[in-house]
Amino acid sequence: MAEGKDSSMRLWIGRVATVVGVAALVLFAGLGGSCLARWMREQPNSFSASAEPWGKLAANLEGWGKPDLTLVLTGEQHGYILPCGCSRPQVGGLERRQNFLKVLRSRGWAVAALDVGDIPQKGGPVNLGNEQGLIKYRYSMAALKEMGFHAVGFGAYEAGMGLFKVLGEYALNEPKPRVLSANLKDAADLYPEQTAPWEKVVVEGQPWKVGVTSVTGPKVAGAIQDKQVRFTPAADALKKVSAEMDAAGVELRVLLYQGYYTKAAPGQEPREVEALAKAFPEFQVILALSEEDEPSSQPVRIAQPGGGETVVVRVGHKGKHLGVLGLWKGKTLTQPTSKYALVQMSEDYLTPEGQEAENPVALLMERYTRELERDKYLERHPQVNHPFQAAEPESTPRYVGSDKCERCHQSAYKTWKESGHSHAYQTLVDAKNPSRRQFDPECIVCHTVGYGYKGGFLSQEKSANLVNVGCESCHGPGSEHLKNTGDATWHALMNPWKAKEGETADQKKARTLKADQFCQTCHDMDNDVTWTNDGFARKWPKVAHPTPEAEKNR
Ligand code: HEC
Ligand code: HEC
Ligand code: HEC
Ligand code: HEC
Image (cartoon, rainbow, N blue to C red; front, side):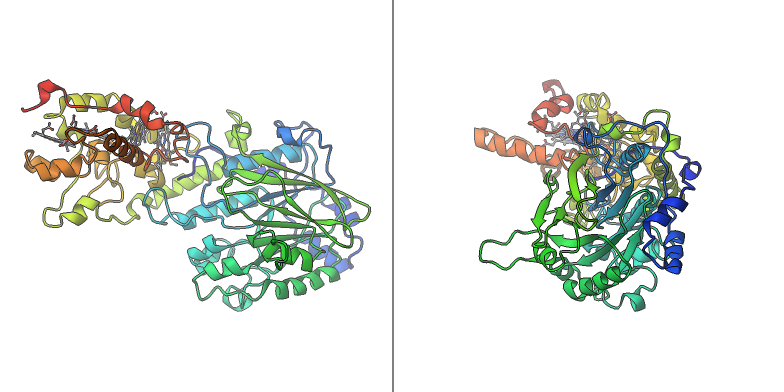
């Protein structure tokens, strides 16, 4: 699952440049005066380079030289705003993205940052619903604004939460970064002023007039259920936008494409991205969606008959990587040459210790957790039936807390008490950058007993006995077992991993796998990156608690 970690803040106000003038004048000399003036007014995000380069460049960018313009391309973040810090090394997160952009800008690179959309999540970790989808979307957009992103698309992830709500959460009040769609039907009526068909991208100190648009392809459009979110054919919309870009003298065109690249087999008609690239050769760059989490390290380059090429970039899921496309003036402005690097948001881009207050995104994350506490998000997630509660409605099993089990299961209790599970809540209390993680349901769900189930953890005040990963996190609510400790039905329910007598090797394997999979409801690939290579075999011995002979038949 999840998201994550990091800290505090100071806005970039001091660093935001005042250097709009000269460069922009040269840039847009081709435009009419009033148009130019407007173009310049629309530009809030100008970042100046500091004298000293900050941080180190990614290894795959070393030796590039300075591009005339650099496109930083992102997307499909799926709600992963920050690594949770559960294990190391985790990759991704908006704070590191901010640091990476700072590295580029500190070297005086002209940067345009664009995002294809699918920024929010479809649901919370484990079985949590999407109570935090909107607030995380809002903070993500605010973070993109701080980072100087110019425009973003949207896709099935945004539409899945209700596009009306999503746009109302941010774009209604904030024009930057601009939410783009050229083929959203009736956009001006349904979502007035909240989206635009295309946008000029103003970046000082580089030679192009840049324009960006976004369209939704048929596959994504078909997957969106919302009747208020309908699309006109992408090609029709692009034709119109392209004519407008011609009129505005745009030389470098970027298409954010909500759809996939599939290479047509010989004899087949090109589809989606390939078809658009061929029909609209004037778009030099297309940022498309990825089929997989881990993207290809190289873009697809589609040669155009008139010379030049269209570069198709995909950056994978969860914001683990971003695409960096360096552009140099070619023979003509409309046919630039380019280099591409896929950069992993690794720990190389962690905020240096003590500099958290200088990372505006880190400060936003701190505000995010504060808002979760203030608005009592812990109480917002509905409590559903635990499988025991659903199966045994008559007896309504309840959570009782680990301390109730100690009396009869002393050795199990001792093992547990000495394990990490018994202080999992304190871990959240102690967390820094951001702090207050004990108020974040998306952390609490794996660090306490029964959160999200009836009678499960709600808050330190209301359910102090259910802090930490307790006996009932694994064995389920224990009240019925306590009422009748000899009841074999409850023994079986509470220990589905118990070995049958005379177990065969195959049965043992299947049983072990079942336990392994259960652990991975929390120790999943996002949160516990160390569970790989038979993590269960290594980790179970650390928490195993077989009943000693002496404790049996009490
Ligand atoms: C899907 C379950 C899950 C969620 C959600 C989750 N965690 Fe964890 N967390 C774990 C597991 C499992 C571990 C232990 C990892 C290991 O074994 O190395 C852990 C460990 C940690 C640790 C390290 C503890 C230590 O001392 O080594 C921190 C810190 C932490 N989590 C913070 C968070 C925060 C903050 C959040 C919310 C953003 C969060 N966790 C959400 C499952 C989760
Ligand atoms: C009053 C004593 C008592 C208390 C309190 C108690 N148990 Fe038990 N428990 C037993 C007895 C007796 C058995 C059956 C013999 C055995 O396996 O030790 C048992 C068995 C179990 C088993 C194993 C079932 C099996 O067949 O493998 C689990 C799991 C278990 N208890 C969990 C808990 C949990 C969790 C709690 C606290 C919520 C708890 N027990 C509290 C007495 C108790
Ligand atoms: C309800 C969620 C949850 C489940 C289920 C769970 N764990 Fe954990 N586990 C955690 C959390 C959270 C931590 C981190 C505790 C902390 O804050 O230090 C953790 C820590 C650990 C640790 C100590 C850290 C380490 O990597 O050495 C071990 C070992 C471990 N778990 C093993 C297991 C095993 C084995 C299972 C399955 C039988 C399991 N866990 C099931 C949440 C869970
Ligand atoms: C991280 C998950 C986890 C936690 C936490 C946990 N257990 Fe277990 N427990 C298991 C698993 C898995 C088994 C089955 C192991 C087996 O039978 O091989 C088990 C088995 C047992 C058994 C049967 C042991 C036997 O020899 O038959 C008892 C009793 C028990 N647990 C009690 C407890 C009590 C009491 C606590 C809290 C103090 C606790 N467990 C905490 C996962 C957990």
